[in-house]
Length: 457
Ligand code: BES
Ligand code: MN
Ligand code: ZN
Image (cartoon, rainbow, N blue to C red; front, side, top):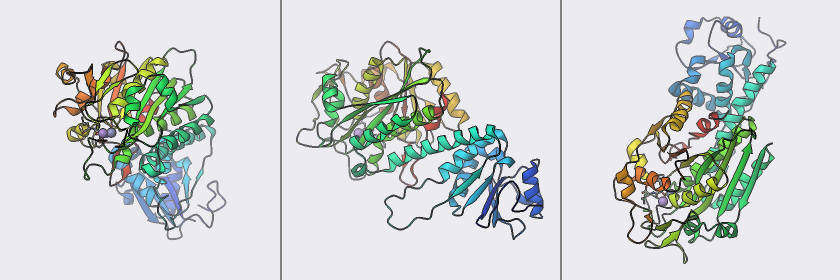
């Protein structure tokens, strides 16, 4: 009943067939019956690989439990199961419910990601062949693949070390997004930033031998509409701490300090490739943070583009300096609301670990909107407060504001600092992804990309 000539085009090379486990589906039913088993034999695994023993023209059959696709824990199992497939595979799309097709293809695309460009040994390549039989499904397949690819690109940027990815390289990467219809990319050089008086951003760059780059991307998918959302990513390409130097224990992994930038770049890639009907921009003030003859020292006072003066208490509180000018720039370019995404504080990691991204806002309705989208995508965002006391922590004897408060509530104090650079209650959300963006075991996680994209898609 299952032969090489049928619509699924199984060939001699086909080693693995992926199908839904749901037995009310005719294709799944056919596969299950061909194997001479029952659906009960498949148990409750989210991902199950069985040998076909020659009963169908493929060596293995993978059964995927469709409801598991939208469950965080179970979809992780599916992802790692798919990632372990080293053979050519065919996806029998016809056996999946339409509602699950996008998720399935996102998982398949993500399962193919490996950070192996620096491994000299040959890496096995997975080649997944897909068949779609209807036009409607093709759009969903496309959507899933775009989400998967955007997330993979974000991860690749975060995983790539500083000596291969400085601000200039990141700007080159961003520039290439120009190829997507509706997207314009502009790179502002150091001299342009000087002309805009971005003393806070440029102050962070002073110890560096690599030039800073301000990246501005615009996607106008709904030009008749007034709303213009800016996604602002922290782009500290490497954070040594500067003269407030990090310890040998806390410095490794600081290549990930551009995680916010990588996240918003992934988001706008998905938003624009999926032709969202929305106006979205990205702003990244990219530089590394290090010591050098010219580097800022504690007690220095910097003047931000907004005009506020900032006393440097710690050169390691650099992310907020770059974001201060990036927020100003986004508003200057007409953002009606803003979301900044940043690996901003160790304190948020102490508070929430890798379970939640920390969120701060001046507009609870806006944050609820984001949290709802996050929920639907199995991403967890926890609302943290900005209390008047945290604002007081930033009072400075010599300047308008200090860049560091006391030892407690570090994530909230950082948010209170950023808030100073948001004009007249313009809706704003600050996402601190220091705990969720990267971990040394799995590398970059790609979290938050899809939530940001799904706000518009
Ligand atoms: N990039 C770090 C925050 C960070 C810490 C990200 C751990 C990922 C993991 C940030 O620039 C930083 O150094 N923050 C300081 C702020 C302090 C000096 C006020 C911190 O959290 O210790
Ligand atoms: Mn720092
Ligand atoms: Zn940093």
